[in-house]
Image (cartoon, rainbow, N blue to C red; front, side):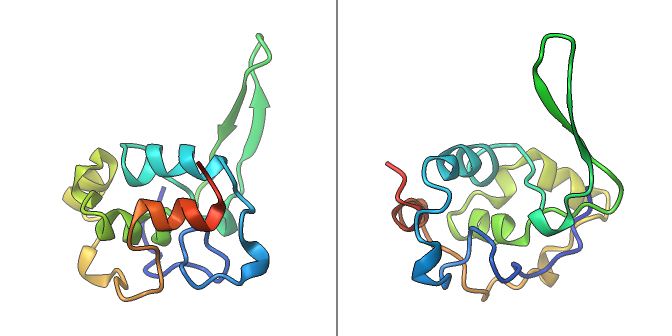
Length: 126
């Protein structure tokens, strides 16, 4: 995974300026995404860079095999920064340590939710 995106894409789920027509589109899925990525240690691939494949193991469990060129979601990184959790994420710290992520290039002025509750309210997650 690369960390070259510096601002969220036009329909990033972390944008605070999404049109009302997109309200609620992630519903409870946003809770899992925020808990794992913004508040946790997982990475979150920008949906516009997903090029890998979904597979199943012998037991029928699905898993994703990433491809080269996939980018970490800039919106997730900015929101993690907004809530004071960016440097709590081990993947982000490692990417910065190995020169894969430059915080100073991240557009922290981009319209991204400032709080977890704002994000949940927009996506109508409880």
